[in-house]
Image 1 (cartoon, rainbow, N blue to C red):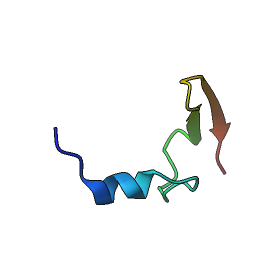
Image 2 (image 1 turned 90 degrees about the vertical axis):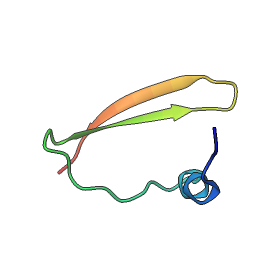
Image 3 (image 1 turned 120 degrees about the vertical axis):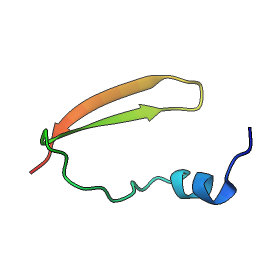
Image 4 (image 1 turned 45 degrees about the vertical axis):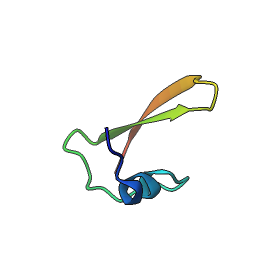
Length: 46
């Protein structure tokens, strides 16, 4: 499998990319740390 380095670099950041407001009015944010621990929270967006 070949990885597009430019695409990967755009994702490897502490800042989210811009996206439109979802029809549901909610977003889910999932954080995964280096050892693989995960947490996810759902937020309402206005």
